[in-house]
Length: 181
Image (tube, rainbow, N blue to C red):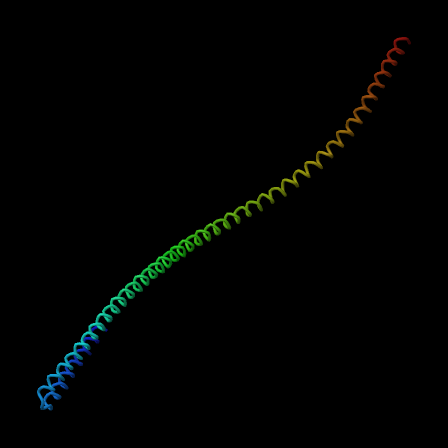
């Protein structure tokens, strides 16, 4: 912008010089020319001072614009840095979650395999338990039968013991009778 102002100023000065030289060449009176030149020089000085002010303002605006652009650039880079940081953190979290998911899947697969093995073992144990419970039931029924036979044999033994006692008594009586006879 400063270049544009300086360029316009130079074009203005060149144009003004050309116009002034034409005007001077056309005028015949030297005193009026001097007065006009003095007026023109004062006008040019006023314009130069205005242009200097405009150049100073343009410089200030350029400096302010540069400062604002630098601030904007700095803020943009800061935000970009934050965004990249967040993006990086998100990617790291994503990778961690993916690894955790893979480990969880492996653990679930391992657990399901272990559960299948346990179920197979439980099925075998249930079959053995069924066989053993049948054997226990058979043993219990055999024991009940043995207890019944044992009770019956004890009763028969008690009857036989009574018969033997009665025979002993009869034999003892018969011996007494045979001895008295």
